[in-house]
Image 1 (spheres, helix red, strand yellow):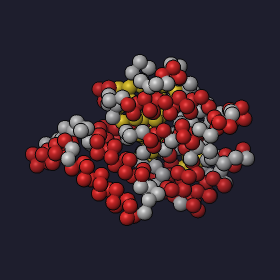
Image 2 (cartoon, rainbow, N blue to C red; image 1 turned 120 degrees about the horizontal axis):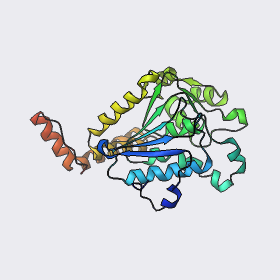
Image 3 (spheres, rainbow, N blue to C red; image 1 turned 120 degrees about the vertical axis):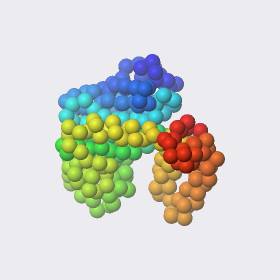
Length: 268
């Protein structure tokens, strides 16, 4: 954990239910849920996950972040008893903590297999890419507890698949198999269970080849314009494009293209 830097570092000294692995040679950080068999996410763990994402976002050795889990299930959801014991102030922060992957300026990949329920699904929805295995099952089962999703799940899902499908999933606590998640546009790709790690590795290496500056710009632009009108989105896209034209990475990309060689992007 010595590689993680954050003002709230004392909260990161003993991680609750997960670990962090940084591979500087591959410019990659893995956040690994490690409370098998179902990797239940505790209340304190949610705050720590946010702090870790913020720390990794500041780490210049990391280009891509992977959120994955030990075992056959990504996560069956949160600690149910914890909801009854938590203060209203703590509960009000749930969505903010789980949205950390979306706020992170770097690409974030969720590698999902098996159960991916409740907060496990919600934090995966906040990532940029979701690779699912054929064993994956997404669900927001809070109706069975007399509740609704509280960490952005129904809102993010509705943006992706529309109100009709979201009502079907949320109001019936219905599970979405991996192949269906891909067909609906929730998952980036669906692979066999044995290929999940290899597919994740390939996507990490692919993303590392692009300009980190252009990737940060693209992610922020797409996030910021999700709720905007078409005319505003086009206007903001133009401003971002204009700023990138003066970057070292754009010049390198153009020169590499004409020289027919791989570009060496520096992120400036």
